[in-house]
Image (tube, rainbow, N blue to C red):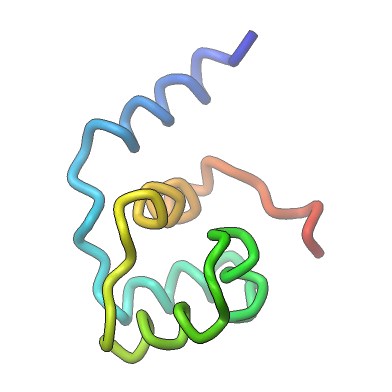
Length: 83
């Protein structure tokens, strides 16, 4: 069973506007979570070049990536197992 706090957080991430991350916000989320561009790419199931393009403002993340970025920004998911 999923905990109520996690369930509420996931519902929030699903229902709020999430496709609004600027390049600086993406980089800040990555740095706040102590991730390299390569590790963030692995977490989001995208290429390293894609993360670099987002941070350079050349492209924007899709909805799925934005939802995961939102959860990372809320510290709702732990990435300790990746390190």
